[in-house]
Image (tube, rainbow, N blue to C red; front, top):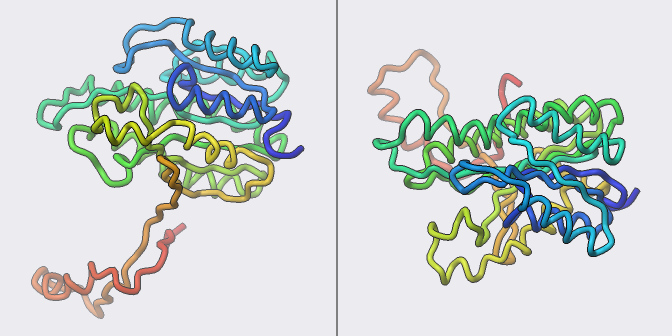
Length: 287
């Protein structure tokens, strides 16, 4: 195969915004798409079938193949049902875009456990549930493509998004390990941090900034990560407004103490410890 032609790809949260754009671009490139969307509000409440159905209708009207799925990614059963939709409709599953998400933004001192749990369950747990259901199929066929939606809030932090940033940062940790475990089985795992004007961001950035962030700019990057030709794995890409760049963790030269130092000795060498001049890409020293 070439590109994504003939591949079966499930896109979660595909009823609106970025997910819809991913589904449309993948279908136009020849993929058969499972359009998953719970149909809920931005905070995760409610549900319905109209969002996913509309995207499927749009894809089919253009002469391409798609099926709808309305399950919540927040449960193990929901994740399994999304993959089952791919198997029932198309006989296989080749890729997953874990895009579904909600927002419950609050300053940390006012954030409740419910605000925290709801966001983790959709973003981080949701990514796990769908990918865990697809993983055995990827391993058996020795081919699979994983793209998770992280965020600059997960990479750098953002006021009022402790729950969201933690979940998005967790997804980076997930793909780092999936890239290692999937390597011998032809499975690639990457993360995309999109910058786009959607209902998730409509009141977060100024209108003049959002005007330059068409979701259409992000979808081709996600599409490439799902192609047969792609060889990248374990990467975090930031995409939006026409720009695409990679971010990565680096390690400083640091300091080696010959003996257990005192607190004061650590303080004395602190400038050298944190100095990033000459830093190199970090790796797991015990991995």
